[in-house]
Length: 343
Image 1 (tube, rainbow, N blue to C red):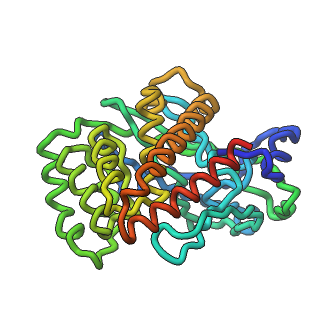
Image 2: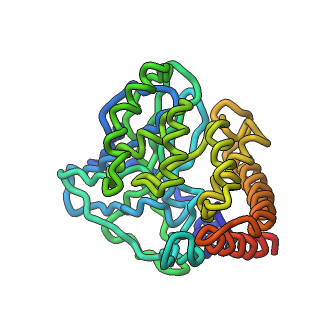
């Protein structure tokens, strides 16, 4: 979430806004990563943006994917649905978990102030959008993106205390997307296609892991749980989001031989937040603004963290061997994090 201790972010937030103009010769193209325009309900839709300039050596592009400051945060404009800031919740921080082993250590954050600017020309500069589109309604949807990443060549540099705001604003083309039902036949076929990769412990195919995340069938829940329990190739790319997912994850959480990592506890906390506030799982069709959603989800997520941290503390005497050591480390990490959040 955006934290006002981030000096650069807060300075840009309170500075007077510059009038925005469209830079002559510059264009921005929006497309889906896989080129499709029809998706099944529940699939995450990756987007890519491509920047070009017909006038060479006149413009710079800030290529940082995680926005380091609100002044250049991209925005998804969705119809139907809400305008959605892209990656603003990540703020200026890059999270770096310095772990020696599974579940060990704690996450630290470092303020990123280095700029990653490139000169625009005829060859496109391609950026993967930070995040994915999710749709909870069937039918036709449209989306474009508004960007403030383009600067003149003489733009001042980014420093730890000064963040230049661009006077340029560009809006991309509109992408039209159709969402169709994720019927049982499609779910079975999709799962069968990726199972060979999921059975190979040496496989690191992110495409197969992503497709597993998209599936919502009971069979997919069983595969996700098995991947986590056996340290499968998709273990670090799993997302438990259906009610059955959370039920089975909680069952594994209580298993004496299962080592509970911070990531597992956080997935349960996210499930807690969505269960307590169903509108958080369907933000596009709620009456919540982005800021209201962020605050409400954050508060409920922290309550979920406390709930499952307390439960884990009660379970520690039942944990055995490696599971006991990792689970105790997780409980300690979460307790310290919760204390810092409450201060």
